[in-house]
Length: 406
Ligand code: CTP
Image 1 (tube, rainbow, N blue to C red):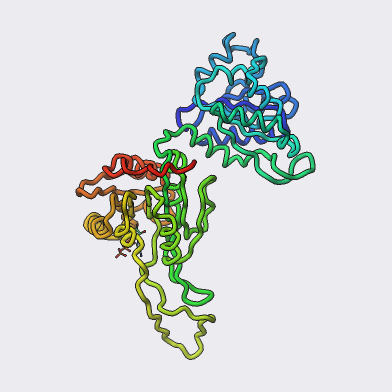
Image 2 (cartoon, rainbow, N blue to C red; image 1 turned 180 degrees about the vertical axis):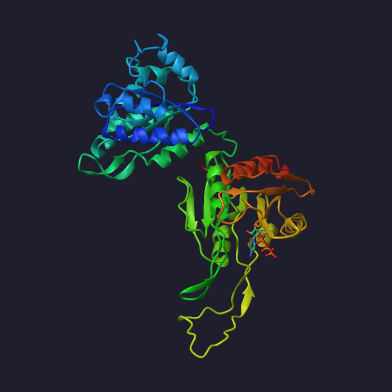
């Protein structure tokens, strides 16, 4: 969101207080936030709160905003990269759906040409009312992005659908609305985390992978318009709107991928898959009694990428190579052996790279042997660079035929 201006319209419901935190989160993402409030919103929270948070005056009226141009709504619209109304009350939804222009928020909504989002929040019966649903349908049909309310306890004492969507979901929707939609219609499978191979009911063989790189890839692909399924052996919370398929072992990960492989356009295997598993899983906890030096017999797990490499048709396959030595040589061998379209070589011993870190240092290697070294970047930045590289692979043109429903 760096360098982007978000006009945040706040209307008058109790969830207006949450808009203050939303404002901060958007700013933390790098956006400049300009707040516009309706008269009713000012009954719940003061313009001073937003002015203090944003460092700029909160705009409240069509005319007479001090130090602002007489055409405030037009100027605001020209500056806006994104127009977000959160919370949007039933009244504000009606005014937006019917093209009213008698206050600053609704007049600005008519003047903007950027992406527009509403995050409704109200009592469950109000939300379910035909008129409200019809207004939402109208807005949706006209290109507004609706960030649906969540279910749960409502301020009015009832419960149901009507709570303002979580701030994380609203921020994610903003990121998506500001991103190029170059993965729209693509079905993307991402694997993440370190698999665990059970030894007995309380022990497993595993590795140090956190899953952060895979989660960043899932988030980045979703932001760019893809339909994303995250097949994960990690305990992290999935990004909003990404389908999560939890797995534990290499065999479960393979089964989850194979179930979805024929429809997929792209598989990115960021997971650190265990290469070996105990040949037998003890049904009860192994006891040390008498077993001074126990020996665990291991067998190889399935090499998931190699299997998919043999099965692939139009799908693009991207692997990771976690190495501690001979980075490029080992990664090139894996690229060839597993029939990959791209491999992300990752020296996990480098500072700022590898397991658990929020940043990564990787080199992209293409099938023709050419490489692209990336500097140390955050994992979400690395994810976007990988997606940029995938888009220019020769096989990209063949993807997207299934038209993944978004
Ligand atoms: N991989 C896989 N199935 C396995 C092992 C690895 O699909 N049983 C995938 C990983 O998800 C990664 C790529 O293959 O995308 C390379 O994994 P890595 O652990 O670097 O290498 P290995 O193929 O396991 O080879 P080695 O352990 O000998 O380095």
